[in-house]
Length: 219
Image 1 (cartoon, helix red, strand yellow):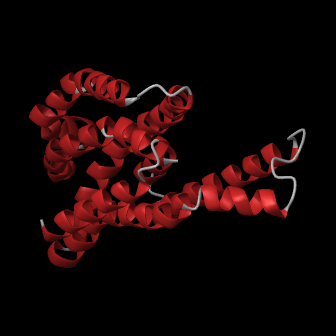
Image 2 (cartoon, one colour; image 1 turned 90 degrees about the vertical axis):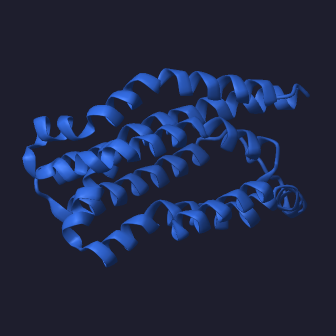
């Protein structure tokens, strides 16, 4: 979705280029979920007692997961609101350009990592094996793997934006030089986020997201 939004934005589709891919993506996701449920060979929950028991067992997921997602979305967009209100739409456009181009690969890689790590960590946890070592190992691998591209963007982001998009996007390149550090940490944070969910530490994760939201707003 992020990649399609970026392509449409660069081709002048404006706000519709941002909204339409998001809406279509959500519709496709819901359709695939419905199909997956209908092709299941047998129902997972046989009766009301099974449904009630499953809800009580996993009530911590909606209880802490929903506010955590809201805080996460808010913390990622609070900067745009503050920049737009204080510095104007021109600077906001430059910031949004840099953010979108960096977030497209970060979301793609992060989403793939979540799927793979969720399955791996869940399998190990179900066997009673600690996943702490795997979390640290995977985080170190991610940090090392993206060190070079992060360093290059940090050092030459403005020059790269001018060379690819033109002089008018030089400020976006300046934003990208610093935002790339944040997206680097965002991807490297995936193993820890997945690990907290597998270990049923959603309350702790919610507190961390609340602290991040407050710090970003104050900063």
